[in-house]
Length: 52
Figure 1 (cartoon, rainbow, N blue to C red):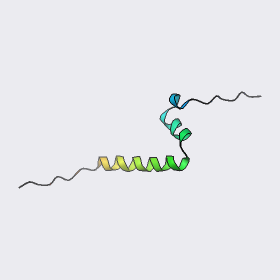
Figure 2 (figure 1 turned 90 degrees about the vertical axis):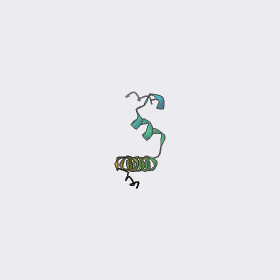
Figure 3 (figure 1 turned 135 degrees about the horizontal axis):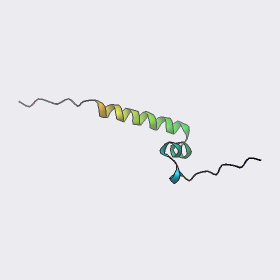
Figure 4 (figure 1 turned 45 degrees about the vertical axis):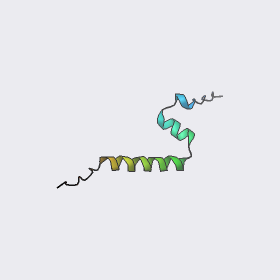
């Protein structure tokens, strides 16, 4: 019989592995959408108001 893989502790996992292990897939999807929105907002230049 093949030996079962021992599960890693979340402390030893990569960010991606821990995210998938700790959260429901729908939550992971929502987190990615939120982070993508944050990154897009950070890249947009903020308009500067002219002072007279």
